[in-house]
Amino acid sequence: MSNVVEAKALRVQIPLDRVAAQRRSQMLTRGGLVLAFLIVVFFTVLFVAPIYWMVVTSLKTTAEVFAIPTVWWPARLMWSNYPDALNVFPFITYAANTLRIAAPVTIGTTISSALVAYGFSRLRWRGRDLVFYLVLATLMIPTWVTLVPLYILFNHIGWVNTYRPLVVPSFFGDPFSIFLLRQFFLRQPQDLVDAARVDGATHLRIFTQIILPLSRPALAVVALFAFINSWTDFFNPLIYLSNPDKYTLQLGLFNFFSQHFVNWPGFMAASVVVLAPIAVLFFLTQRTFIEGITFTGIRG
Image 1: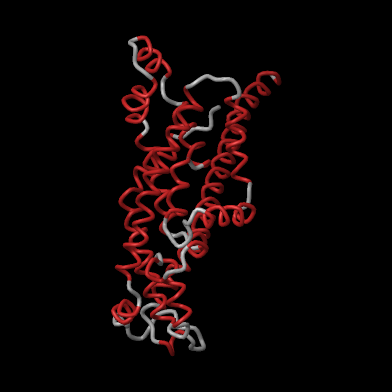
Image 2: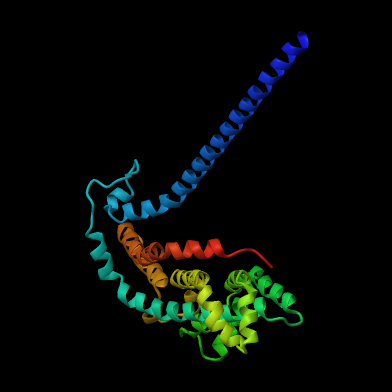
């Protein structure tokens, strides 16, 4: 009789243990989700706070900018700061100069990086992996190491104070873009390439008619990165451009700040105007951007 009672108790005890373990697992899962949510909210606040402060400051008066305690929201929105700033800050001229650099840089980086990435992903040749690792190693070279030699070279051939030093290097590939596209190309079915080769297609035709159409998300990511980097670049135009008529938006902002450093609302208003095209571009292309990042693997 005692054996029967113990067996029944064991049958009851096992489900209770499983229920308790399942509850603990659910609590841990929910706790992990809550913690992840809090971390995301924390970093979101850190990211949004400077943008919020820039926009709010652009709508304050100068007295409110330096007021103690801090004014988190202006008593009156000073929309006049924007036309006042644009009357001093020639946005159209600087934007046109920046586009003269950003547009060819975007095209050159995308085309050259795609060609090199195809060679590293689909062509078999001796030393391919070694050369690819050398290309990646260039990412670790600081800009300061090559700054003086490049400046001497560009000055010797008469390119200083022109847009050529800012545009021409982009047509020789970008290491990060090459890596990104190579990983994406490796995900494409090799059977398509083999079938095209059997039909007599050249590598150029395979690249243009098979690989590129399948790689539009990755190409869009590379183009977006190249455009944003060129639009926001301050250091290279500062080094190579000395004529104020050729200044980009970032140099123009620096010049505006140096001449009107007390006018913080005007400076922030000009900064918002400079940032707005990039923000709009990202929101319009965020689906393609996320798709390209998601589909790019880490094979090879």
